[in-house]
Image (spheres, rainbow over the protein chains, first blue to last red):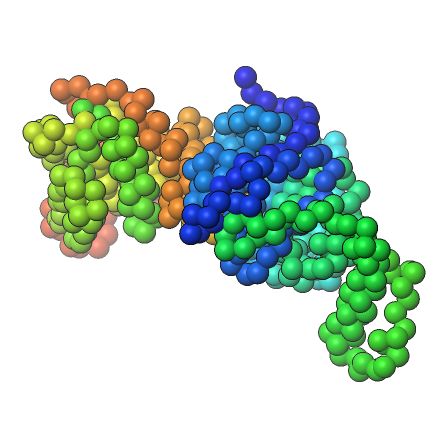
Length: 274
Length: 233
């Protein structure tokens, strides 16, 4: 029997059963249960296997990927419908792609995607809301008549995030290095947190990592350990956010062709920005 | 004997897909034979023979189109595979003009298309897609999930009955369901029939007429402002 959106919304837990790294060394944990509402970071050096881990999740790995990991949903093997029918897929994956290859206008692309994800388009204006969301994240507005292939890197990532949040609207969202997206990252996090989902961020960003409930540390292709954000780190998080906001401020000034002075480093209004 | 015909335009990843399929079939205890049909160059037969120690052959279609060549040689190829003790014959072929398809009634037809090939591709490849049993989408790691799903929708719009299977053939991801489909396919009978109808026409170019313009040709012809029509006796 076909599953429907409402059923995939009943997901409460994803489980990662251990696989192994590139040299065959087993993951450092036997299993990891991610519960609804968890915000999780995946950290590690470039090439440590972060993207591979979220690909395992997105593919509902069943010992059939190079890592040998197994993914369970609500403690069970996911039904094949999750992969065979996009309308049943409980996962939205925002990849690092910064270009689209689809030779379609934005409106047509979003309408087709909404159709196969069974997102009500007419009643809820999903296509328009997706565009509005995307345009909150990017400095260069996207129009519905733009060709997908003409979008810049920032526009592409903004549209992918908006599409995943509004058109897919899945209980599980995987985001691969959103900080590299050339988009308004703080606004993205703020908008995303308005939804109750399992969020898994692959990230090099201390701000995202410390705002997570826990972080999965990857090394040489294997899960090395899982660190829960402790009380000390929670206290540090606002300070890290201040640093981060100061750097964003400097970045914006430089992008806009302004000079940077000592006061720009000191004048960050911490209260307002965090 | 089970017959699997795998079609797809050049460089889509047919060989990569079959390289994932062969060892999995062997693991399930099936003896595999492999036939490659190409126009003028192929070395997959040597590759498969070396890598999997299975009987392999190749046929260059040369003057014939690969689909036409397939019709000529397939019966004898099955006998050859049978003599070699095979349980499954895998045929890899590059259909070219997209007016017919190489699939045979009773065999399994697989078309391989790339996720990167553009949203209109499913509408362009005609019976190679619409008469297949399974459309395998390769190179899925090269596009976003959203594009993968929209590409799937475009395939299903063009060919509603074809099952879509997405694979990353380089890592063997998504190959197992294909193997299940092959295992579930019955043996082919003695009399083999091409699936679907071949295009109507006798090609005057194929028989050597070089003049440009429909006025110099006969049989099924076509003018710029007309649909195809028949000229001649």
